[in-house]
Every structure is written in C-alpha cells, then in structure tokens.
Amino acid sequence: METLIEGEARALCRVDDIADGGTMGFPPAPGGFSGLVAWRNGEDVRVYVNSCPHIGTPLDWMPDVFLSRDRQHIVCATHGALFSPTSGECTHGPCKGDYLDAVKFEIRDGIIHVAANAGL
Image (cartoon, rainbow, N blue to C red; front, top):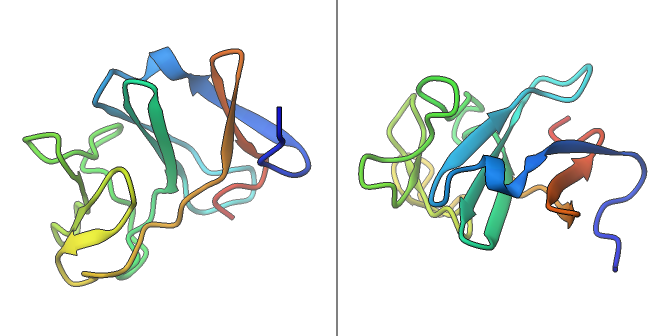
C-alpha cells in the first residue's frame, strides 16, 4: 500500500462509524486550533479541516452537524456557504470558488488515519 501521510498518524474512526451520506467531526490535534470533518458516501470518503475559508470559523452548527437539510452540501454555520462534499469547493456564499482544506488520509483495516498534526 502506498503511504499517503507522512510521519506519525492518528486514527479518527472506523469508516463504518460515519453514517452513509453523513459526516463526523473530530477535535484538533494536540496544540492545534482547527478540528477535522470527515464525509462518507458508500466507499467514498473525504476529510477536510473544519474551518471555513472565508473567515476561519468552524463549519458545524452543532457537534457532527455539517450537512444541508438535503444532505447534498457541507454548510458553514456562520454564513451559510455551501461546499461540495466531494471536492470541498464553495459553490454558494461569500467564499464562492474557494475550497475547504483537504486532509490527506489513509484507510487501514477500515480505520481512517490522518497525519498526527492534521489541521494545525
């Protein structure tokens, strides 16, 4: 298996812990400020820094609540910006055309791993 992350890694959760079509938030790395958000659709998984590119506020409305009502977009709780969960691109809102910061990850034995310092 090709290694996508360098250095020490931290485990986020099992892929199956994230509801199909859902998201889950994770706290910042030790000493970090921004947490992470993982999105899953079947076997497709993406991990982003939980920070709006507009002004850096967390995206979630409440813990683990990141998606629009129709579950088609990740939404910024501060300004209502909409992001594609597959690309992280802002498609509507004050940061239209910007992207969420994607986090490199690996799935090992069904567990999502990121670099230990992801989100710093």
